[in-house]
Length: 486
Length: 95
Image (cartoon, rainbow over the protein chains, first blue to last red):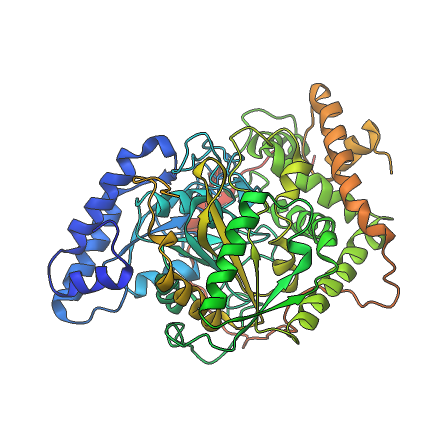
């Protein structure tokens, strides 16, 4: 049962082989027993089981949908009414959301069960999940390794079979990189497809929610629920409804896959390169044609991102002032002192650093040199992708330059940590869809992820390629319990 | 660019984050490292490039001027650090 796909679970529920209550109890028990992974910040069995009971009634009444009764773990960045929603921060450690995020509304309408809220880097700022106020998450494949970040709890929960599926958010790689490091599948949709309403803001022009699961087929089902126009998000896109499962089985013959040479140069570990090369061989066997493409401004994506994202963060996080909700310092002399102490106590070191960088680049006299220059680089990066998609249908490459690193290895050096996002950040700057699927194991039997990047709204085609790859391989079915078996 | 301790204090005050004397040197050194990374983009000639603020060319939507939210003050104030009689309490700001 813990290894079943979402459609297998739906079938078992429909046939009354198991109830949603039983299924939810199975995963709650696993999540509680795996406390040492620290994948969850909040579990609330009573709330989960109440939703499961409602789902069972719906199944009995014959009005169930594909996700009715299935427990799903949500990154603790999504507000869920009545649930503590912390965003991995001391600032919100006592915050109980008075409303639902659009994504949560959609899952509730579908009859899915909220299994719990997963651990994450504070305010989604990080690549290792070491920046959480609630402590680091451990990688289920190797407890000494980070799970990646910022959606590290969701990735670890799916990998360790603590949840059948989870949600994440991706501002610079925060779905794809932890999916790669934990050996699961994750998809960041085209910017604007998933509403940001109730998804706690980090960098609004880059933030995008998406699904994390064990297969592309499961991702497609989750995406069907998560995508949709929402008037409360000013950048939500109004488009015709899509069934993301519709192309899963389509043959790949003639599909052109572009390999950006910049993704295979200096900085890429040998073990990751080997696994990605083998995956490309597999895709060739499935009929894909592999072509070389160039993304010459890739190197500039990190500096541009570390101007734009902190600038937006410094503005978004100005709301945490200790007045209307969240942490407030215990003692202060006056209002300014209250703000300064509240924010010094409420935010961790990395969040403070990014707010300071953002405040500086937006300050008088520096705006053009940093912010406007970064926005221009952003356009160059988007133009690189547009040119590449003239020559290919999809782009493929590594998700991360190395397998999961050890806990503590990069936590004292922010710049080294930032460089580990070299293959994922440009996708956010351009607003394109990207995904990561397991494609093997590298050093110390730690998982390797294959990244697929599509043109705008190419999610169905990306899922098609991922699904055909997963039908021909079994990397996505390996579980930490049985080991890597390389 | 060199960031002085005074620069960092000025930014921290603008950002309303108290940075202690004990931490200021380390914060300055880390910010210096981050700006070393950021400044790699200064070498690129972008005079002919239009800035890009969003991936999709979206226009700001307008909505009818109608009441769309109900009064939920009690629920919202239930999570506030200090309230009294429906008002948020803060230190005195006007003498």
